[in-house]
Length: 335
Image 1 (cartoon, rainbow, N blue to C red):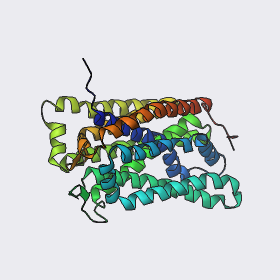
Image 2: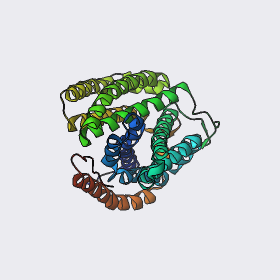
Image 3: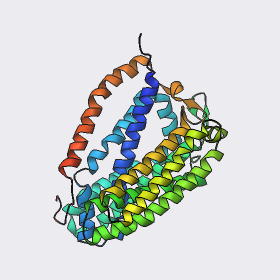
Image 4: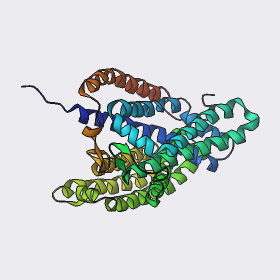
């Protein structure tokens, strides 16, 4: 008996995995940039930079995989979503460029290090905020007619999208602070621990606010979350979020180093699961399903072969990089 595999669903999970990996791995990079001005000039800032020096550019791989995969596997959704959010995508890319350039030039051009530090922090904030607003714009829905975007240039700009933008910035700050607890030492670690306490509380408030608002955006969201018997499963997400949050603050106050970061990742995973509950099977809410947007089956098969080869390679070298540069960075760093 043959096994019938829905390649469209497989590709949806591949894209979701790539996006999640980007969010959590580049999220703590951007979070460090967001928090950067609060660290003292000198050893504290240098330690923060050195903690991500070996891995920050490799983390961008997942953005390329997620964006490229969306274009190849779901070209219709790619066209609609990018057309609806062009200003945000441009802002995000410019922010990432500023962040990357500033990261290198602050070491090579010490005379203007203060300016490069501002560029690093500002670029990180813009990229994170643009990603969050893009998420809100997609969740609230975009106007589609004849399988094309039919809305305006600024339809994405709403109170809800600004809320999700702020939520992502705070969430990334949490990831950044938790990462620094794990990787730096001395006064920088103590400061990161204080920041993680506030960012953790802020992240939970943001998650609660977005979660409370989302079911009222579209009736379909409400049904997916609250209709019986599905609510018996969906209710586990906020329950698990509460448990993880309790453990996070307990470990944070208990002086743990690695646990706060791992638990912050778990919070993001639960938030991502909630996003999946709200959206699936739509890729453009209430307009285009994953099957509507999917590329032809032959194209999916061809790309799946390549992905089956390249994704294990990416996971392997990413894991190896993190293993080689494990432990505290100290003040000497890598530059």
